[in-house]
Length: 190
Image 1 (cartoon, rainbow, N blue to C red):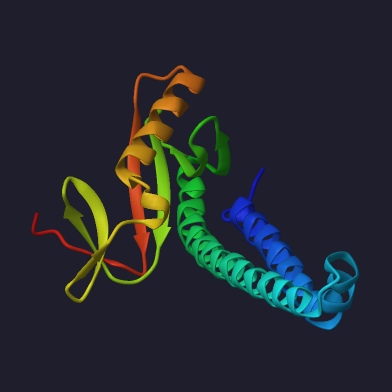
Image 2 (spheres, rainbow, N blue to C red):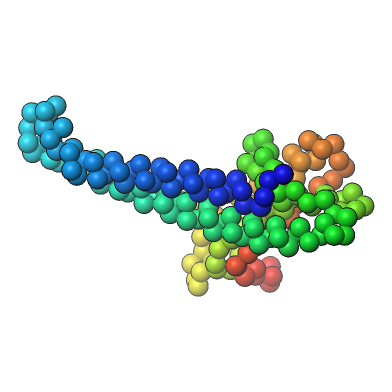
């Protein structure tokens, strides 16, 4: 049985490895790239410029993967908090599962099945800011600035898709999609 946040922590580890590889390539290019490229290009200035370009791109890539790993760890921590809370329902005959892979939708963070057979597909989101409804999609607001969720993800569509796939996979009448926000405020005025 998977632990809450287990898949997300694995994703963070993979991103850290990619970041280290990118940073290592940058260091290698700074230390040795110039001499290696000089033998291929037969021009000191071209070799030096190409070495600097490759180093710079590698550093940018490493920073990108490092930041994505940080976000994944933040998400895993939120999943662990929600998972610990949901696990307490087991004492009341609820079935609780975590990190369930779902075709096309990634994974379901948490599945809660009540003693009476009601299914709840719970997607955990973490971060700061206020969650608002903006142009029929949930977005994050920081002060007066409004941002979409990462990669332009429509989280309402995603959790509904996860619930629909879970319904199909388990041959049940209905699965309730639930969004759980950890660390954010939710604007309830709309």
